[in-house]
Amino acid sequence: MSGKKGKQWVLLAAGSKGWTNYRHQANVCHAYQMVHCNGIPDEQVVVMMYDDVAYHKENPYPGEIINEPNGPNVYPGVLKDYTGDDVSAGNFLAVLCGDEAGVSKQAGRPVKVLKSDENDTIFVYLSDHGSAGVFAFPKELLHAADLVSTISKMAERQQFSKMVIYIESCCSGSMIDHLPKTAQVYGLSASNPHESHSACFYDEERLTFLAGEFTSCWLLHNDLSDLTRTTFQDQFVYLQMKVTQSTPCQYGNNELSKVLISNFLGYPDSRAQAERGCQAENFKVTHLTPSHEVPLIIQQKRIQREMDPEKKGALQRDYDKHLQEIIRTEKALQDIAKHACPDRDPPAVADRRPLTRLDKMKDVVEHFRRTFSEWYKEQDDAFVLSHLHVFVNLLESGVGVARIKEAITYVHSLQGL
Image 1 (cartoon, helix red, strand yellow):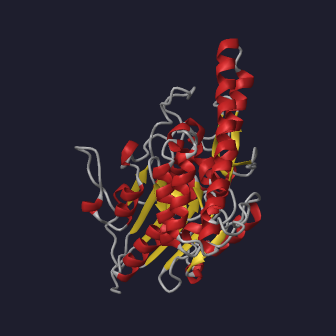
Image 2: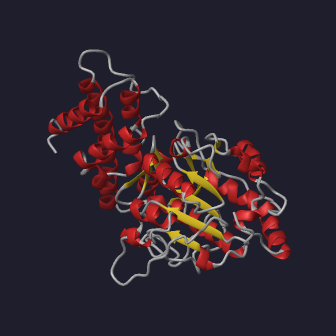
């Protein structure tokens, strides 16, 4: 490595769209404001978010996104490097590894990637729904197999000096559990490989949740800390204490946890930090709710608030339909497990086995998504994703990929869809 002073690169990505998922874009907008305030140049920051929340028809304050109760508007000035359908797993990986040719963008929109080299640091933050070995983007999934492979190749090509990844989603630990421990890569997840993650700060006026628990605590700690004296290990210890509904976990090369956060995220001037610290003194996380329950709770709130009988009835019918879809999803996954193991008892659907077969999991999940594609159009991805651990159980108990895919196809044929 040369003695050249390196640059600090930051990649922020919200993988969802829609009003019920408000919190993911709010998280990313807040994270952008933090790195911008800390002096990271916009040329070294890439932001990916669908950008359908600030001016959504359900937003009572057009042009405003907040990430905590009575908090500041974190939307103004946010970079819009990738929005709408340009927010994809393929583009995320291409941006991360600096592959301009691999980016697929709408005509006329400029391509922006991380142009990092062996002297540079990279900080990555992801916020959305997830499951065993997967992180959701609006129309596709980012698989652990592809994330780990891309980072491993970047390490071999010396495309960074050090990399840190923060990921907030259900089962987020499974996305970075297999990071190479010998490379200069450190990861911190909001939950272990088997847990759900919780939304927080339900807003009665906006009828949605404003943030995720992990991100709220992470950004608060940055506000309260002198980042020139605070390590990622310090932050991890803090998050272990403050995050109550899931288990933050460390992965990759834990030696990097001793590095100062300012080496990756810059630092605010002392006056700005003092002001933010004062604002954070009375901060308390509220309305903690498992991520996959959020759509139903928001719909319940809509029903309670609606005074028009006809509109109230329509909302109730949508709620009842969602409940039926949940029942249908659970039964289908149980049936797939049974048909994949016709000669013996299938692995317990409730089991949470460690995922080791990353490539096979990707193969099975992609077949499931293609086969049951209508589910991803009719209902919130979060609930379907929360059941993908069934495929982990099957694979890790020795059931072959072909057998599982045949079971998926067969069960779908019985659905009458």
